[in-house]
Amino acid sequence: MKTTTPRALPTPEPAADPHPDPVFRGPPGALQGVDGCRGGWLVITAPALPCAAAELHWQLLESLQPALAAPGLALTAVDMPVGLAEAGPRRCDQEARRLLGPRRSSVFPAPLRPCLAASTYAEACALSAAASGRRLSQQAYNLLPRIRQLDGLLQAEPSLRPRVWEVHPELAFRQWNGGVPMAEAKKTAAGASQRGALVEAWLPGAAAAIRASLRRGLVADDDILDALACLWSAGRLRRGEALTLGGDPDRTGLPMRISA
Image 1 (cartoon, helix red, strand yellow):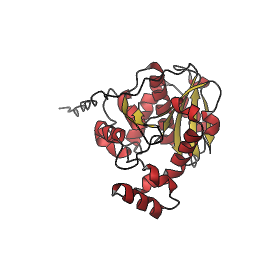
Image 2 (cartoon, helix red, strand yellow):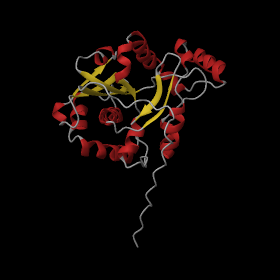
Image 3 (cartoon, rainbow, N blue to C red):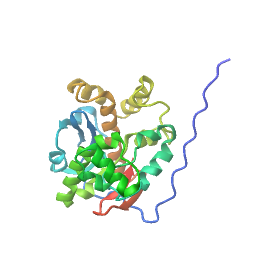
Image 4 (cartoon, rainbow, N blue to C red):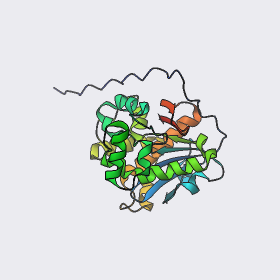
């Protein structure tokens, strides 16, 4: 007798924020999905969505500044913390972990803003402990250079802020999958296949074309799928369809939110 594994039910989404962030209402233009990778930043740009894979443009950059300042750009969806708390966890991270269930570990606590001043892991842990009583994870510390770079751009050029939105690929794949988190981790063969199938159905040939042009030592397969998931989220933001968690402003006015 054939048996089937019951399909997990979607986790209820959080109640509406009493002070919600506005839906993105910027001008029409190109959309970007951005993911950090070993080689820097993988930036995938679409002139509009939907589009064909042949219309995409992608590049590997050390600095995000040229991408964010590109003429004709409407929105950049980036898998990197934007608004940073002074002490304690960000509400958006907590809500995302609850929604992701078995994939909750993919959302780790974002570094606190005081940690941006650290030059060593020990110093970052000391600053985090002083502010919140908790050390910084090694994973979060490894992202500090990119978080610091992105934050520096947004502090120096406030005009960029309205079009830069923090997203998370696993939250995007959950939304893509009917509100059900991915059953397998992204680093597994089954997990890669599940995510790849969603991407391929949306933009046939895109992942393969990007893979063929970039060295694996600089960009992993899951980086490509994640960047495309960020681009998918940019399209949802553009259309006013995205789920947005959190929204509280940090000390500098940047929103602490995650969209998908």
